[in-house]
Length: 133
Image (cartoon, rainbow, N blue to C red; front, side):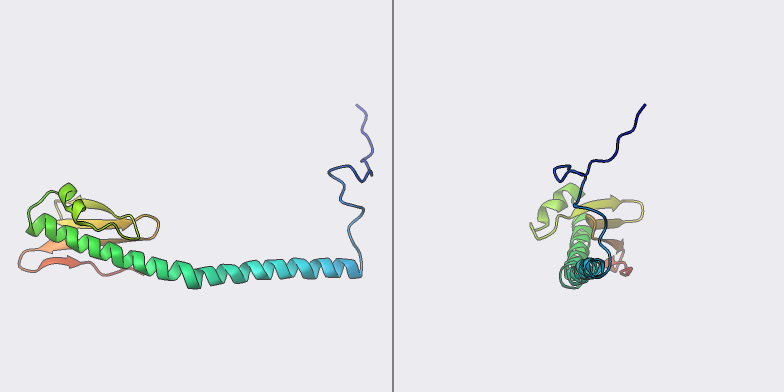
């Protein structure tokens, strides 16, 4: 089997115009690459600070509210958990509810963001479990 010499045609899709740059051209290229990487990192930090953290905190509050409300509905009101889901307002986040009947708890979950559990205790009502950071 014969091998062929790589094409040096400018129309070759794998040919990028010659050998890798050397000297000042290489430094400019590396500086540009560093600028792009730095900009991407800066945008990532800005996204976390300005978008993700506040949204995560809001999701946590929404899960806590839904857990306590559903716990009260289920164990104080005596309604089925499926019926209690109707009481949740259509908010910013989709909330799913789960029940542990043996432990008298209801857990509300905002997918990929937060979960909170409320526990029913006789005489105390429904109490939220402490947040885990």
